[in-house]
Image (cartoon, rainbow over all chains, first blue to last red):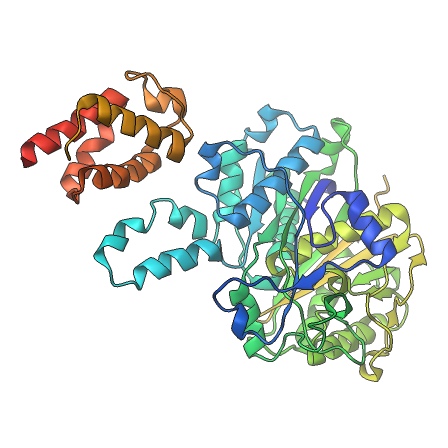
Length: 412
Length: 86
């Protein structure tokens, strides 16, 4: 049994805003959320890259202590966006707790802030520090902390999927959620991801020479996907969630439909865990199109993974060019906020939905001169007013994991 | 530990307010029922009790605390351990 799956609500905390209007304003005005790296008295002083996609506005958390006690910063992001999604969804409490709603949600590490505290005590070699390893630290730092704090807070009793595949975490959440509803295992899924501020991730990419370092004094000018002067990625933070529902169920209850998921693919490069792999990317694009049952020329917009690294952007552009040619618009939304890691797939999905609704395509920020090696695709360098019927959202992760989500403007 | 029962109650009530955001619970209120004070919280409270008493509680003693439901129960628990030790 294959059922249609629609997106009926969404919310994101991003470096370029929280409310939809703020995010759209940043996209239309070309406002970057990349800011100076915050000093944390740990690694920040050693890191060459001094920029970060930063959430620097207050978020009105109103969680009871009973929920807060098992939440690290990453779970705060996750629970807040899910709270907003459920509030705006109009779903009855009886449905939320019925077992027909599941959760697919993940993060890269659990809470690294809490993990650091655990290891600090662990390595102190001081017996008195043993009890300072708090009883709830595990619940805050375990890799499925976001998913189960969500189930606890909202009383969700359905399936739990907690992908933790770095940069494809939340695109997998959406994809696996889509398949779960499509094949009748659940009637609705809350899907997404979150990652908190963490210099460990920056240090990892910095040591791999993959981080941007040439724009430390002008953070808003980086990352620069596909630009000839790009010099690496920028790590960011945030959280995002979408509600997926089986179409007939959503229609029956009169839910507003933001878009339809028509396809998903997920594969692995089957080899190197770090290097971008053209065959792997081409295959995930083809598998996505095949899963959606559409031809390449039916896709109007591609939200590229486009992190702004030297090689990654070239390989992705070549892969897109070989499958799609120069027809669909290609934009790199990380240019506005850096790479929000586990969150990027869901944030980029939401941004595409917002742009679909408005009929506008945000250009790749900081793309001033296209690298000749990336020139075989149709870059968006200025804001474009265009109806988007079908969009593809591509994400690739360390470990050789690739995903492609196909989203369609809703049409009965 | 050199505290009267009243002083111990006062200390515990301060801990409940500061650590668990539970303000002035009745001394015989069921903390789980009334304030969702669960086993995770109880473990956190044991760390505070160790500080008050200036001792390290054995695993066995800690396990005995898991049936505690009220502030009065906690006072009894602390006093029993204190008497046994002295």
